[in-house]
Length: 193
Image (cartoon, rainbow, N blue to C red; front, side):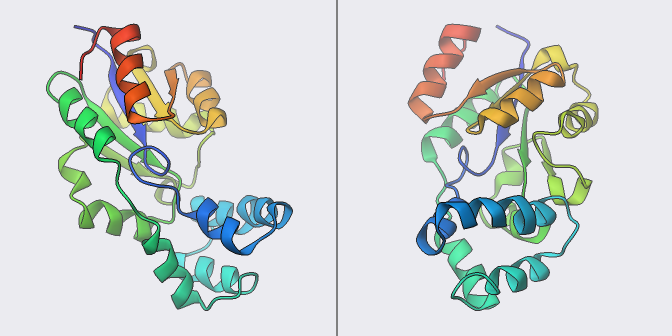
């Protein structure tokens, strides 16, 4: 059995995306990119509070801050296939959850769905003041886990985040589906889930 430890991204892996779905509904692609790289990025870094995030988004979306928060929650769907993989990995490996997100929304999600029972270590960018793909965030998580970078694998749907993890010395798996992840784990690490 491999001695690898696994770090999972939240949105796009464990849970459905939220921000891209909201923006695709209300904003043209160029504006969505601009808002994602400014307002959302500030929130991910903890530079603005969650309430400030929703207030600032209400300035560019045709929704009130309260409706934006409600719509955020309407997109949340956990991937049962990925959760089954996490449960299987826990039997012989350490698993962590790492997300770029405003802290209150993320912590509410973790509590609401019992994710704290599945992951040994949970880290959210807004509480750290660093966001993926910055290698420093991965390094901080691994230090908290007590894991060497060479012994850790980042599973993320965003290729830029995989590159950041690799810069921190980790391996990376680009996530596309639970089925592909199970196949990758078997092919690369001889882990059957």
